[in-house]
Amino acid sequence: MSMVMRQIGFIFTAVILLSACGERIPPDSRAAVTLPIYEQGDADNGALIYQDACGQCHQLTPGLNKKGPQLMNIYGAEAAQLADYDYSEGLKTSGWVWDAETLDPYIADVETAMPESKMLADPMPDASERADVIAYLSTLRAPAASTDADTNITDNQTDQMSNEPIDIIDEDQPAADFQP
Image (tube, rainbow, N blue to C red; front, side, top):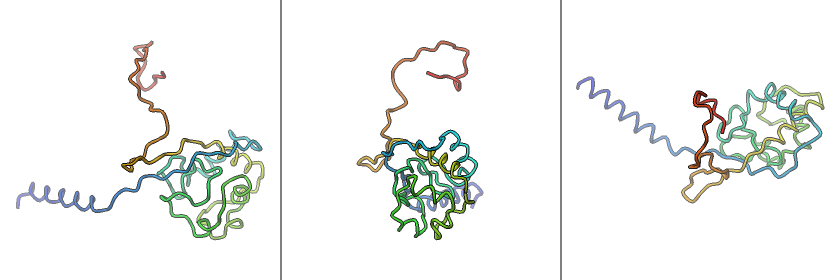
């Protein structure tokens, strides 16, 4: 058998094996946040604390879970709600809704608040820092995704593309810097 035939056979086998891995589960997302923004903290400072203390394990984009689940629309959501993340049994059966009342002790010391939790985080003893993080989490709001009849995920947002003409003022401006 020639080298080319072996390579074609290998590629064909690889494609068959990869396609047999099953269907990709579409990313899950939470419903839109309905609670008002938590105003007993500084959301801007909370964003900085979040980045330092939480960003290593949590993303903000549906379907992009890391060690922890993505946190978009977390404020006011039921705990352990995303189908595309494997939560601890304790969190699954907690009945918690993520608001200031549940987030504060959880962020303060997860081991004490939820001993069976999978979250590995250092305690955050400073109540002011926790309030700032909760304020930030309460601002993480995006329209909930919906599923159409063909099970394609669609956003409930207006399309960013349009057939409307735009005026280009500076033809020397790089396209990457263009702001309509």
